[in-house]
Length: 122
Image 1 (spheres, one colour):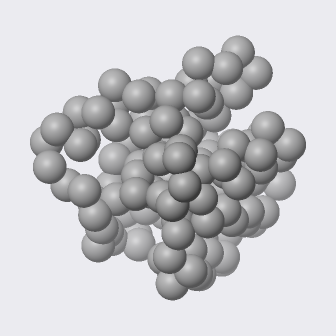
Image 2 (tube, rainbow, N blue to C red):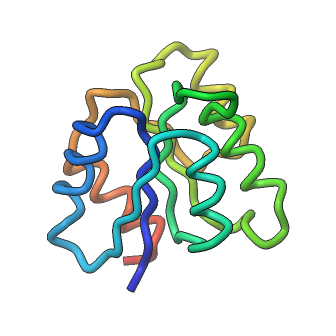
């Protein structure tokens, strides 16, 4: 079973993404901040991380993405940024951090499902 980690400080967003992907055969993991996400990533090694940029604490989504992509054991994990930060600079920074894709909130649930399936080879 493929594992998807949803990282967002807003429970409603995590719930929306979980409901969006629930009909598929995925194990859904959730984190509410950068440090919790790093801990889960190292332990669970998810197949995809759906990652918000603005997170409480000292580690934002860009930093989570950089750490994943710089780690030899984790660098092949797909990272999709999900953020209300839609400026070109933010999208560029996400790509520079190593994100595989970038969705601006609000996003289309159908597009998200398609992107997840594409990244998982489904």
